[in-house]
Every structure is written in C-alpha cells, then in structure tokens.
Length: 352
Image (cartoon, rainbow, N blue to C red; front, side, top):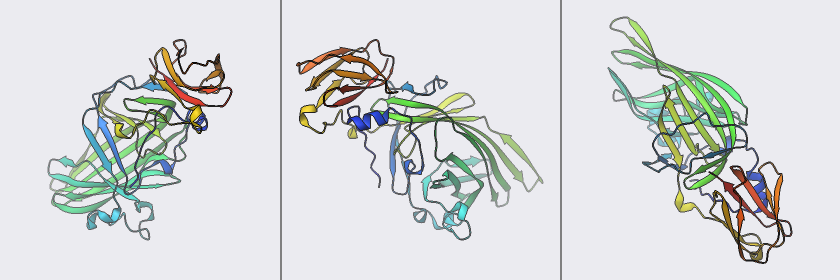
C-alpha cells in the first residue's frame, strides 16, 4: 500500500528550486491497487475562474468537514461476475483494468445499480475509466464503457487540451435498457502553488467539462427517451505522486456541489534539517503575510529568489541567530531564501 506523506516548506535547495517550476503529470502520479487516499469535504467555494501560469491558489481557510477515503483494490478482489470484461487481456485488451474502486450507486424508476465498482486502466497513454460492475436489480453484471472514458491523457502539461466520448448500455430484465453517452473536454488551464489548510503543493489545474445524456428504452411500450443532464464541470488540482486530485471542486448546472481536498495533518512536519547542522534554518509563519521570522545559523547575505529564478532582493548578512525580514512588498507566490555563502535555503510562501 502506498503511504502518502508530505513535508512542508523547508527543503534542500535542489528540491526548492525544482518545486517552483511547472510540473508534468503522468501515469506514475495515478493510483494503483492497494493505495488509499484520505480526503475531507467542505462547504462550497467560488471564484473558479482564478487560474493561469505561475499562479498561487490560497485555500488555506478551507474548513475540514466530513472525512472520507478512496481505496483502490485489485480486480480479482471484486465480485467474480463483475470481472467479465475487466480481467481478460486476451479478449478485451482495451478494458483490462489495473484496479477497481467503489463507485456511486444509480437508481432510476424501475431499476437500480447498487454495490458498484468502477474499473480503471492507467499506463503511459493515459488514465481511463473502462467500465463498472454492479448489482442490477439484485443481479451481478459487468458493463463496458465503449469507447472508454479518458480522464487524462499523458503526459499532462500546462496548455494541453483533449476530448473523449464514451458510452455504456445495460439491459434491464423485463424493462428494456438504460444507457448513457458522455462527452468530456479537458483543459490544463493553470499551474503553480496550491495552499491547503495542512499542506502546500506544486500543481497543474485541469478543468473538465462533462456533458451526459441518459437514455431509457421501455420494451412494454416499444419506445425510449433521452434525458440530458445538467453540465458537470470538474476543477482538479493535480500534484506529483498524490494519486488523486489534492483539491477537486465539482459544479453541476453552475452550482458547486462537491468540494474535497487532501488532508493528512499527522504526516506534516514544519521543516527538515539541511545537510550540515550548522546550516539549519527555520522560518515562520509559513505561509507569511508581511513579516517573516528567521532562526538559525546562516552564513553571509541572503538572496530572495522568485519562482522564475530572479533575485529580487539581497539581505545583508547578520551574526544574529534570530531576525525578521519584511516581505510585505512581495506579491503572493513561492520564494526561495538562499545563503550566498553556503547555499543553505528555505522555501517561503507569501499569501494574503
């Protein structure tokens, strides 16, 4: 099982500069069987239009609400009759799944899909939902998405756009059939720093617009009808190695209905030592608004370096173990404080 832990703010210089650059997302950043991702839900938030390159999203004021977890299980551990399309690489190579995860039950007058598992496939081409298994009015069934739903195509970089159409259909005994057509449009519309109540991440933001139409056919009457659903828009902030979005806001019909974010405060530390103890430095508060406090032995002057590598200011050296730095003139963003003498460095987030 993958255990996801985060370390905040104080990092060695190489990691600090790497964190300030645009990231790329690929299959290594997606979940696999045995992983568990913990999250919290909260009340709705607005201003989803706030995005762009080298951006700072400050959601540090989110109030953790309900707690949940997604657990990815092996295909073979799901009910046997669910596995028909998803555990046979010879007959159904496009639907051979890597893992499964519990999904949301579906209920429409006359039938229900319960105890549902969604099946996923992830490789260098992308991450997709290939179908699901469920109890259909109490009978186990296996349902393909054909074509499959491409959630992401890899590698994922800022400015990328793509789209995919998917479909599934399931026969309902004595009733007819139920089907759904879906069209997904993805746009990577931002990259930068995301601040959450208990962590800070370098992220890509993906905006997904999803149009779905449900179709029901009734054998008894010999006709069917289609019901377009309100448009769903998913805003997802993706970080490397975190399996699922570290923040996701889902809007249905223009109203934010679901907000969930990564929250694992037990794994958080406020800093790690530099390679040599004499170079250890602590900075607080972090994120900072106007005045930053430094404590520790730092040789020589300190450069304040922006996320794009520019030296914005040089602070004269000091023999004091504790001192303060005014950062009120710095715009919100991620900065590095680096010693010109020995390279000791800290990462600091300015947020207002």
